[in-house]
Image (tube, rainbow, N blue to C red; front, side, top):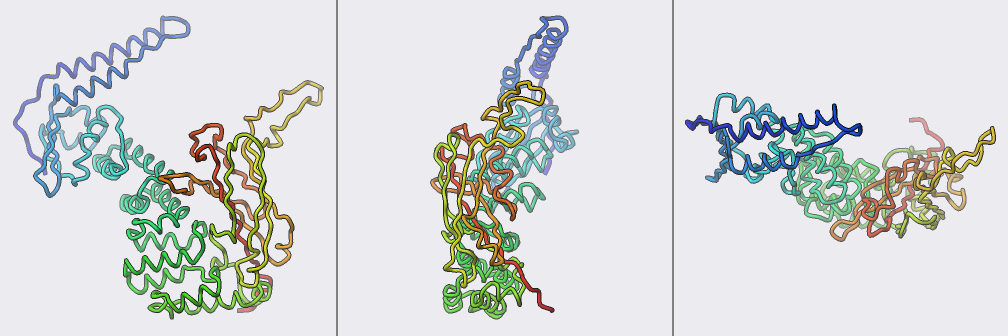
Length: 478
């Protein structure tokens, strides 16, 4: 809704004075560069300029437009005396809107109207302070009025706060889908995958859409206690959302039933309301799981393809699949530990264990940077500095018996960050299946800095996960 105003523009004295100041600063700097000292002299009055611009907005001096911002569904109206030139410099939308008007009425959602003063201040000063609850309304205003720099800035803020566990990931995911922000959507999806245990136990889980659930369930990088926890979270979601049968059955078929021990499968069939309602849709998967647990992996692999995702563990935090490791003062010395995992998820392997040895080095030097004392001509070469190295984590089996049984191992290292008393996953590093270490492990981490995003109270919180992968030995004709 727009409304023409009858007020004439105010005098431009203050505004032109401000522009004159900018010109004086620029000319002074140019003169110093050309004819001054050889090193040059810098004159910086940018803070003074920002203060003048803030005063210009606050006092309304020399304003030539009036914005009346009305919160939709209320009588609340906020009035802003602004300047056509400054609004148009940032926003093509404002330039078009104010091309032949001096007063407009802007209808905005309540949350957007509440932060409109911050939005306008950004157009004058190029800065603002964002709170979590203000991120979406500010991004909406930046999108509506086509202020690309603010759009990028708020989106960067949201991605950064997702990584630290502060952002409402489910709500931001749905917002990113609605606006087509693919980078923000992927960031939300990654956070949810790495912290599914925490999210499934929070109020956010009830706000997950069927589309988001369909994006999460097939992923092998989900971090949770075990597959049973995922089934229980899904069942709770089904009870709240009451989706159409086709949606529920598709979701239930994404559960990896072979990863659930037979005793727990029997309990699910006897007690689960979701399986009582949709059991026939997953009957073939349950039979597959029981067959997998009943036979030895070698025997099962002769008749069935075990290379599908149903037979691949996710990133399980249960003791059978890994162990936490807290390294205090990780910038100082090499550390080592060991832990055991189950050989495989099959019931046949439930009593068999593999021992893993782990070495952490905070300043490992690649071959190209290791100390060299002289070149071919005998000329001394400088020693590499310790700070030239990077952290290294090596995970090796104490024996190689697992490979002989048709099993190889994928390894993952999770790096935790603490937020409001809970430990969330901030980074995840995966090993190549044939490798003993992740090539990019903490490649950009600064472990010397006490407030590093990789540290919690000057300690590195890791969780080491080993995922056994079975190999089909004999393929049977279809």
